[in-house]
Image (tube, rainbow, N blue to C red; front, side, top):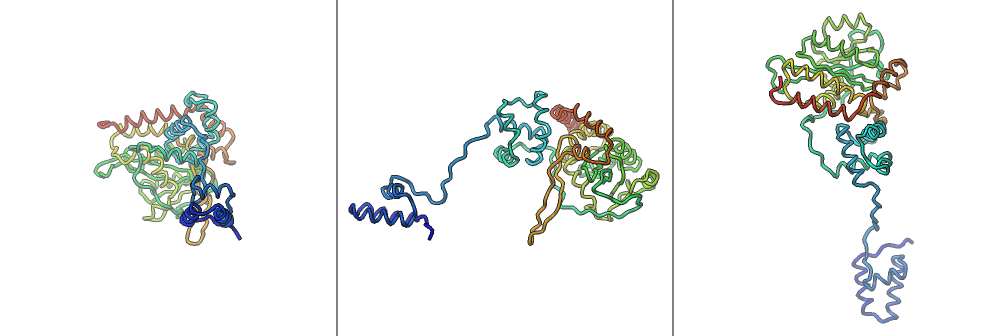
Length: 381
């Protein structure tokens, strides 16, 4: 029969009896407490004499402090450099860039702190960040897209849609009307490769098909993978003869989502918020100056997003009763996913690797902030 820890009331009763008892009776009371609780005789004696506190529940001893204030300051600095991405993604970003940041002189920490940062877990990073509330950004969006489903209705097929191959992209326009639809307003053409999550952006003065078509061709030239397929919504800027004939000539699979079902393009819809809206928000941009500044900004931001920000991709969904558990792959940058693609030529991979070696994430972030300030300054345009 297992021993049970005595309650505070029971122990109080024994203490009062113990205080009024003779020496022989005290021995009997002490034997009773030892048999009931399983305590060591000396510990039980100390409890009865009131020389030791009785603890209810397990004894919790504080863990030794591992991470210092220097480590915490470094984690918060890294959080800012990597756009406040979640702790699991930040852990991967640190794996990729810590040595470069230290070599470039941006991460100035002691050797001991550097070793601790190399092994700090995502959970500990999360606890450090929760303890310090970071100031809100003026560029955060207000809503996030929900769980989205992939559907497409083929218009013309030269090869089957294959989400496991790089080169099949989803495209969409992000409106910059700021809630005022009057007049012509700038739009951002957002293009996301489904397999690698590589994302490209290009601003256009209106959603006229000629501007969108030219922007799409520009983005095609920037993609690190051959363009195999395009999936769009039913807007006239995409569903038109010019783009249709272009895809026929270039043998590009062209598909569209169902009418009125914007969630048929989940990958690009997600990037509309996490990339475009998170960067520039919901302000109104309507002048040529705005478009030029947006494209200068996107020219730097595309490098930052694709080379340095890891992405979590859904691996599978597991139903457990009424709950659905989502299992994610280990976070990877789009750049790392492109390098892992067998269909990408070695020459293209070498060019990407050389480009990555020339980049400085902290300098890139500073350039983005400077361009963003110019874009968001009142009166610009």
